[in-house]
Image: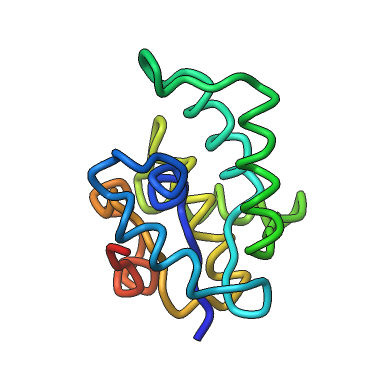
Length: 141
């Protein structure tokens, strides 16, 4: 089985007191590069999120890169080509996806490119406008 991790499933992996830590970590360590992946954009989202967490949860850029490296060591990173990106934007526009929802739609297209059978996310509602082929793959970790 190939699994795709969206950013919401990756962030809790690195915070022991996060409500979703245990489930996310257990799922994360079940996979390796041969059967687990994430989108290239998720690396930037992970970095952005953890360097702007409130209070004591905020980490430095250097610490964030250690977390990003952990993801890169464990999962394959999937990126869309320029043409795939444009095609995914066209499909998304036809589905009525606008605003920030486009970022999750792009991640969904990365999951399709990777032929992921499952997309792990804590934010299934962010994918609600995607087509059924994507929505049917969504699972919480």
